[in-house]
Length: 354
Image (cartoon, rainbow, N blue to C red; front, side, top):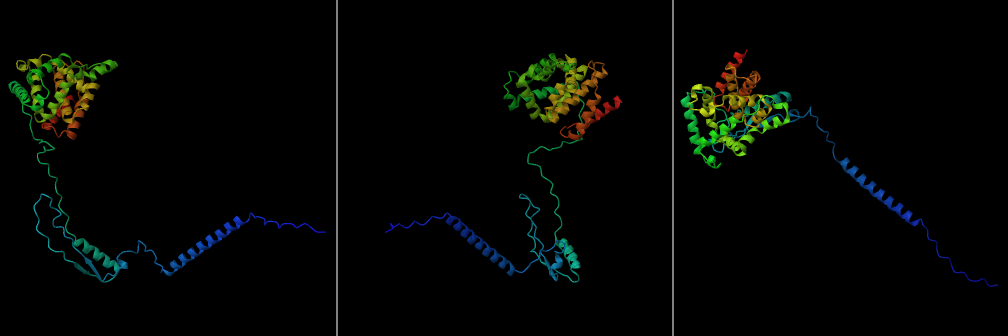
């Protein structure tokens, strides 16, 4: 009986061939890494060992101390500035040879001493030179504030007004009248509306009124005008302040300064405002030290005059203000020409109050 012919079965596909391929690749990779590592280890073994030097053993003891050569630097022109005189050329550098013998420690000490001796002496300190045309930082302290009569004080004020009329920066404010008439009107406006001295902190509205006092009564433009004058005419402000104080203090000056003498109580209020109110002190703290110290000094003089005439109706105690101003003048009053006069007067007030 004939059996039917059967076709051969196709070979089975195995799933193990990718796994075997991955294993072979890993073995090759590990083999390559092993060979590279072995080659590197062999190259390190060929190099001689060089121990790291210790800090305590390094120095001249490990060197050949038979001869040490020190070169003397040439610094002939180091002390001369760009605008200074030309120095003579320095002599050529001469190498110095130091012969040493004995232990390395002795050689090290000798070499160090000779090295220090071979160095040039220290250069003298060069004082900084002021810039051309710059004003000196510190004014002379031996200036004396001259005493003024009513006529001299009035003439000083008139001369100051004439000076302002010739200044270009004053013309830039486009004043409607001459300086004398303009500032006389401002003084009258200020004396007619003095600030609040007592009870400033009783309510917020009063405090805000005091804080904006000058802005409210003379306006922003006049405030900028005063600030410009304080900046541009600083050299003459102290003499002008002394003249104004003379005109306000001396009763016999009423004929020459009637405007200022009209309301001495208002002048007292302004002095108390700067010394004894939060708004006045805050206003001065925003000013430069020159203006602040000068205003505080003359405010103290005005309150002291009121004490002597029994007119200190607000009961302002000057002792704290005097102590504070003395300390500030001694620490930062160099810009004031008559600082020593101010300090002498303040110390006199302090002795009288004790």
